[in-house]
Length: 523
Image (tube, rainbow, N blue to C red; front, side):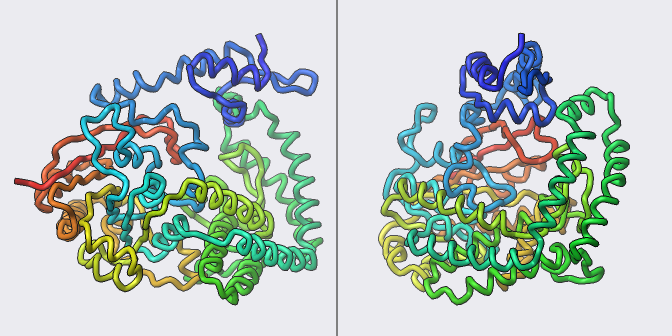
């Protein structure tokens, strides 16, 4: 039996007793998870292929077998679609290592306590996130009517967080995005890059349709095709066409060999010129809120325009200036030659996300302070930068903490946004990061991590209410948090082990969990 996309999504929804969209089915097709048949120009899916996929994909039992029966599947939030876990401003800017908003909401919202014995926070309370990251705790606190303070050593992280919860004059913001977009269009039109891109896209489409049909990924997965060998062979074949077009349209693809400047190393000359051009149009904007929003849109844009492969966007390897075989998409892809498409897309998407969030916002206060959580005086800093919020903090103590500290030796938090630091001139404080990738995961790194995280919570205790609750999201492979809790003057009173689904890493199918540690004052 053959099914259309719509029929397949209906069947899967009924089979799983949850919503499965046509887009979800398209994903399975794109990545070769299910078979397809082309019939009269239509893509059809054999029912047996869907049955095989979903019978293999019963993750709950498989993950419990691998990770233990103490796995709390309720906290997987499996029933939520990606659009819900990345709702409104939560997907305003890419950020490694963030948790989904439903996890914050579960522990902060007094109305979602069906599986809890008590509510830990209520509207009007203050919650603290001393490792604020991209501001998930701040955003969800706002939705729930809870005030929130964030702290982060990264100036760019604080920049992202504060722009998510900020209020804007949307008409003014729209007018400014249109003004800059129109000026960028004029610049790009004069450069001749659009005609080059059109010709290159036509050639790529014809080539990929011929050598990388819709069945290609399935044949790779079944072992019929050696992906690496075949990909390299076709990459070399198309390179001749690419080089001919580059010469014909006089496209500059020469990149500096030795440079520490991120924007020169990872952006084609024409792309960097466009980035500089847009930023030159943003700088004169007098409204600081609008200027900040435009900078965030530009940052999101340039992250997508780095000269690298699609598969390596998360972890840069080597600059790419030619067409290449793309492991992610299973075809020949190309680097970016203009930012115009991404700029316009993100202007529209960012505006929609801010507007969507504005409909949910409550009249509460949220702000992320740039600083070292180990030593910062929260009240003094707030008094300087947010006097109204400072008065509330003076009147009532912080009710508790919800946070996810960095994992040991996993991410360099400044370096992941090096393009923004380079362009906007934010001050980098890499040496003050706790547990960064560049320090590794060895014994010395772990000991330094334990002391650093414990010092953060010990410092934050000064500002907490007597009967505080601290929730820490961590994948504690090295069993560090019992020691951290003890050094901080706290005790672990509960643990919630949750499966982490829909990870963005390449091993996303592997069973993976993290723990939410519940800490209170040690008596």
